[in-house]
Amino acid sequence: MSETPSETPSDRPPETPPGSAPASQPAARRHQDNFREILSQDVNFDFVGKRKFFAVFSAFLVTFCIGLFVFVGPNWGIDFTGGTEVQVHFTSETSVAEVRDSLTSVGVGDDAIQKVDVAIGSRYLIRMQGASGTRPEEVEAVKKALSAFGPDWIEEFRIDAEVGTRATVIYKGDVVPLEKINAALSAMKGVSVQPSPEDNTFYVRLPGLAEDIRSHLETNLKDRGTEIERIDSIGPKVGGNLRTAGLVSTLLTMGLLLVYIGFRFDFAYAPGAILCLFHDASIVLGVWVVTQMEFGLPMVSAVLTLVGYSINDTIVTYDRIRENSERYRRKQLPQLINDSVNQTLARTIITSSATALALIPFLFFGGPVLQQFAIAMLVGMVAGTYSTIYVASPIMILIKENEDFLRGLVGLRKKQVKDAATP
Image (cartoon, rainbow, N blue to C red):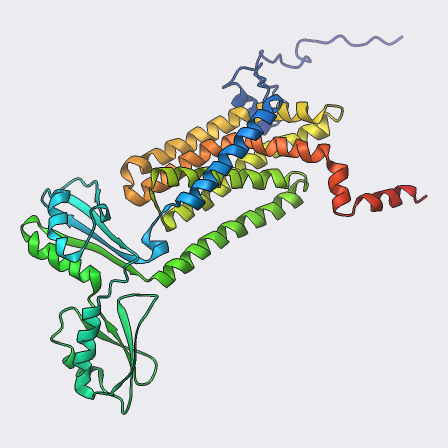
């Protein structure tokens, strides 16, 4: 008879302290377990059990936000409406009333002047939305000055819709040097002539509303150390094109993510993820309409960034659901999803908290543009975490429960029956 060798202490596997992962586990699994230690090991919130209530709540919230966007409308920036924006800095402290009084003759409204925080002196943004920046009297003065080359010399004189403060002039006869044209317009302050690649054509840069604002500020507040930091002028046509491009880029992003999730997981996962993104974007837009913060190109950047952040959180949860569905095949789908969401909850909290900490400096020290970006991201992060739990996963349950019906709608049911009957 052969004796079974007794197990010596050195042959025994090392004991694992309670609450810690065995050393044989992969490093990734040990890190995941460490994440969960932030919450109690017995955490088990019944997210799926409350899905019907939150489905109604989410549908109401999204409908309300869309209604606000359509019927109330956001505060469009000049990026989308066209107009003129001047940023001015005064080295001495200057009040809003003083800036407003100095621009009374220009026709700048009270709500067109916005103060921006600055360490020294005062800084203001002066916005004139929808205004092309070109005044009729300037156009007539230019035409009158150019009539020195002949009463019928100008064949066409048009204001470019894209720029708003530039006129395109096409003339008849022989080519006239730009020096002569500049000399004819030299009496007009702020007017300049620019060459064109076309024959018998040149551009006239008009002073416009921005130059008028500059002139009044420098004259009326010259003792305050007036410095024009930036002048932007956008025509209404460009503004409309940018608005369309922003909408198209957002829809294309969602469409490409739909295809990616369909191939990466299963097409039963994709609708929930896209509804998640639509939900998050709607919430952010609703907040922007309620607060009437300016909606410009930085907002489009924030929404696209938010879409990427939100889909990342959803994919992490989906990956855990797929992993658990392969491991626990006998579990009901609602319970399996509930377990998966609870298992990724600590990771979601850590990721969201870290991102929020990175955005806080932008919120307080980033200036107007980065401040709006940070607010949009913070609102979207809260909405994204909520939608991953109460929108994406429950939609997947709904699709799985009605899978036969949905397959029949796309013509897959008969094909499956035929395949099953084939020996």
